[in-house]
Structures are given as structure tokens and as C-alpha cells.
Image 1 (cartoon, helix red, strand yellow):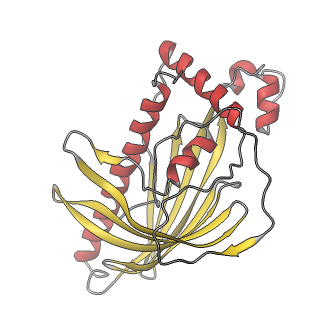
Image 2 (cartoon, helix red, strand yellow; image 1 turned 90 degrees about the vertical axis):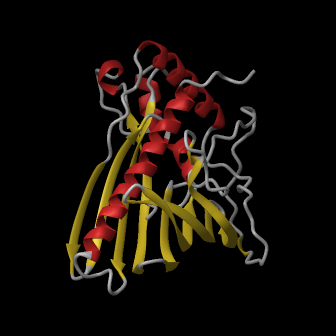
Length: 272
């Protein structure tokens, strides 16, 4: 099963575009039409994002970033599984969250075999208020079952906050699952704080930029907490073992795609 709802390509935006004020008006926008359009408002500094991209590209030429493997811990209690995932990604928090919430579902593709690993089949906006957007999505996730990729349908409600970089999700209908819900968040990591901030430990991005002289790179920590309960008879061994293994394996495949995409961003040639 998928560990997070969507991952997309970085959209090159005008670096002169100002930050837009948070709307105080809530709006119910439920519609029968699919909506794959990204909200117009942004809640991070685009100029700073482009500056960080330049820092990462220059650093990648001299000392390539090592993509760490995800830390995955699965516990089981009273029929429910809890999968906790931590992943360090060599991208800024704003950029990573932008990827994760791409309405089009993102480039989760096995390019060598020309296979889509995860895609949005439909997407409808139910509610929007400032940085918060609630959507109903139908996803197809390619699950690795004994070396064969089988598409699994997932109907989810997503509650995204583009300012806090947090998302919650729950199922409307997920194959093999009686219960399926979770949350994820993206937090900053001050990569060069020990090297450039020797006199004080920065606690905020502003402090980090100041103490590093604007030369410190920002990375991201992605934390995912997913809870699920398989439907009968998949809640009993040995079928429950199969569901657990399939969930972990599919999550690892999608997370590897996150890391591969981060490499592509860090090594990309900037657009003129």
C-alpha cells in the first residue's frame, strides 16, 4: 500500500512571485469534476527556494549527498498495525512537500520498465481555507507481489496544510483493508550547522541562514505514521504476514523513488 498520497515534479515558478497572504475565507468547493490543479497560493519564500537549489547543485558537484535508507518500524497491537517511517531527504522542506502533494500524483514511475508505481485516477476538492485543502482522491498503487506488480485501488480523504507541511489521510475504501489512515509531516534539517554555526545552535531557519552566512543547506526529515487493520481473512496468519510484507516492500519502493527524484533535482541544470 502507498505510504503517502502523491508525489510530484518540481514546477519551475517565477522567482519574483511574492508570497500571497493566507485567505481567511473558507470555501466548500465539492464538485463532480476532477481537479488536478495545484492551489495558486504558496506559503514559502520562492526566492529562498531557488537560492537553496543553487547551494545544493554546487555542493553536489564537490561532495555528493548520501541518500540514507528509510527507518521503518512496524508494531502490532489489538489487530492494528502501526508503521512508523523516518526518511532524510536532500531537498528543502517546501520543495519536498510540494512534491508529496502534487495533485497529478507525481512521477512515481519505473522508467526502465515504463511502469507507473502510483497515480491519481481522480481528485475532487471538498474544502479549502487558506493553506488547508481537503480532497477526495482515487489512487492506483502498484504493489509488488512475489515480483509481479498488481494495481491496488485506494479511495482516500486527504487533509493537507501547505503552511505547516502536514497531511492527514483516511480511507473511504482500500482493498484488503478494514481500517487505513495516517499522517505525515516534513521538518527542516540544518545540514551544515556544525560546520558553519560554531558559536550557537540554530533553532529556526532564519537563525540558520544568519549563522551560516547564507551558505547552509536545508534538508528535510519526512515522518510518516500509518495505521491499518486488514479485512478478514487477511487479518489472520499467514495472510496477515503477506499483507504486512507487501505494505513494507511497496513503501520502500516508493521511498526509493523519492530519493531518486531528489538526486535528479540536485543534479539538474538550472533553467535560464
